[in-house]
Structures are given as C-alpha cells and as structure tokens.
Length: 225
Image (cartoon, rainbow, N blue to C red; front, side, top):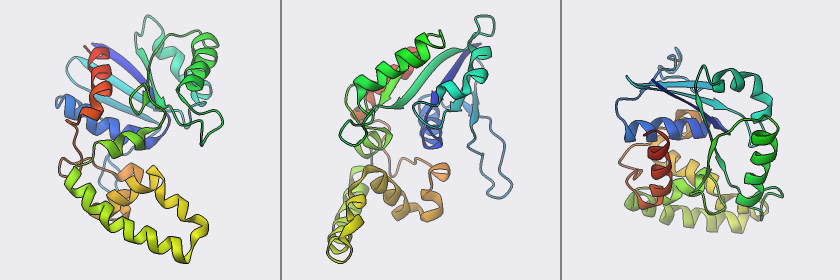
C-alpha cells in the first residue's frame, strides 16, 4: 500500500482536499468519524483517506510555521520502515499583505526549518499554483462555476458600494478573497454551511475541471502515481 502524509495549514485546506481528491479518485474514502450533532464527518487535526491501494493522512499544522510543533507526530510516520511520503501543501501568501509572505520566503522557511532542521525530505505545493503569490482562496475564486459566481458578484457589488458609503472603516475587508469565498458559499448554502469545516464543493458551484487547477492536478497525480 502506498502511504502519504500531507501537512496543511488549516481545516479549510482539509475540506478542499477531501472533495478534490475524491473528485480525482472516487475510490478514496474519507474515514473520519461522524459528528453526532451534525451527522457529518468531522474535520480534525488528523484526517484519514483510504482506498484499496492508498492511504493518506492529512495533519493540520495551524499555520505555515506550525510544522515544527507537530514534529513528534510526523517523524514516526516518515520513518523508512513505516514509509509515509511527506507532502507539504501551504499558501504562498503575499509579501504585500504579510511581511513573511510570498513564494520565495515561504520556500526558504520550509527549507531551513523543516528540511534542514528536522532532517526530512518532502514535496511542496504552494497555493494558488506553485508559481504565483496568493493562497487557497485565490485558487478557489478562479475555479468557481462562472455563471453562479458572476450572478453573486453583481449582487455583491451593490452591497459593497453601500457599505463604502455608510461604514467605510472596514469596508476594505469586503474585497478580501476570504470574504468573497465565504459569502459565495453563504449565498447558495447558508451561513452555517459557509463555515470552513462545513463546506461541500459541489459541481453546480465549483468547476474542478478548470484549467486554473491544472498545476495542482498535475502535482497530485505525479505524487500519487
């Protein structure tokens, strides 16, 4: 059995990976326990996928710099005898909004604090496309169902314009990608299902065949071949 350990920053990444990995391979089963309150499979700090010939564990580090804090969980799994292949999937972020953001600095951090300090090798993918600055939300907004997203944007423009007039102090937040993704979900799914751990990426609203996902799709297929 091929075994993979994926380290991500947050639970939103787990939810996206859950739906996208199952889109690529519908034999993959999400093995997490059912939450009795919501009747949905829980998104936890440790998550498991399995098929007949593959096992994937996804650990949530909490931030791009959180990998060192879960070292004790990682090292036994990447031991050659246990045989998990390590994959780090994170946001590149943006140097304009984060002092330590941007692809160059993020790769430098991972090289110094993970590859060299922990003495482990791994494959890396940085959202949105392993080339540009940005994050998961940058990618998500590029692979929406265009008709539904365009309808949402038209409504949202009027809302943002009015907020700019009556409460301008924080109106800039309405232009952030995280806000747009949350309210795109909220528009069609309601507030509760717009929360990161409750999201479901359905074909009616998301295009997983989008060319914008090509670099990530190629990465995943190469790693899991």
